Length: 342
Image (cartoon, rainbow, N blue to C red):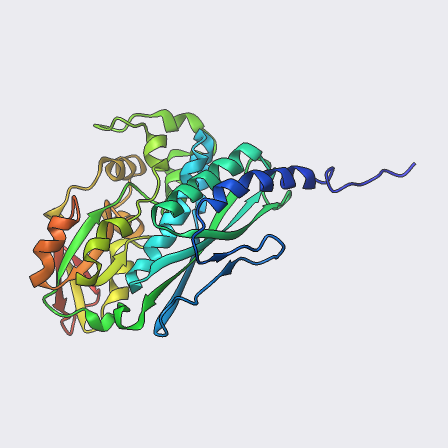
C-alpha cells in the first residue's frame, strides 16, 4: 500500500497555526487606534489617512533581528527579539523626522512553537504600544527544510509619516553643529555573526553563562538585551534637532555620513565616553583590532543627534545620559574619511 502523505507529516501543522493566530488577536488588537479599520475578512491591513495633512510624507522601513536570534533563542529570551525588531524599525524612521504609524511582522520557523510565537508577539505588542504604533498585519510561516527544527527568523516592516516641512535632510546639517550621543543598550541587533564566531556559541551554549567584568548580567543576558528605542527620549526636543543618525551595522564610520553633505565631516571625541564592558570583553576574547570593533559595532553609541550649538544645552538637559560626542567640520581636500575619531 502506497504511503499517504499529509502536510502535517511534511512538517507544517495548519491546525496549530490557526490556534496560534487566534491567541495573537488580543496582543495585536490592543495596539489599534482610531486610524485602524476593522478588516477581519480581508488579507491586508487597513489604515486610514483621512486625517492626515496633504503635505504628509510616508516613510517606510524594514529589517530583521539578524543572527541575534541564535543567541536570544538559546537562553529563552524570545520576547526580547520582538522588542528588538520594533525598536530597530522605529530608530530607522526617526532620522528622517518620521513618527511610526503601523507595523507588520514576519515570523518564520523550522518547527512552529506556540510559546515562542506568543513571546515574540508579546514583545512586539509591548514595544508598539509604547510609541502608539498599530500592528495591522503579519505572517507566521512554517518552513521545514529552510530552517532547522529550532531555528526561526524575526522580520519587521514599519510605516511612519512626517510633514514635508519637518523632513530632516542632509541640507539641514551645517559646519559648526554639535554632535550629541545617546547610549546604546549593548550591541542592539548588529555584529552577532562575529560574536557567535568568537565565543563558538553555536557549539557551546555554556559560554553564555560567563561573567563579564564589572557587570551584574552574564554574557548571554548582555548580548540579548533589547535594542533601545529613542523616540520617546528625543520627542520633546524633536524640532530642535537638525539631523539624526541611528548607529547600526557599520558603526559611526558608515552611519554618520548618511546625514550630512560630502563637503562636511564628523569629528568624534574618543575620550568623551567610556566604551561599555561588553565591547571590551568581545575585543579581548576575540583578539579583535579596535578599528574592526568600530567598523562593526556601535561601541556604546546608539544614536547621534546633530544640533545647532544654540540648542545643545536644552537637548542635553532633556535627553538623559546624553553627552557631547563631537562636532561637524568642513572636510579638507585630502581627507579620505568623512568621520574622524580621535
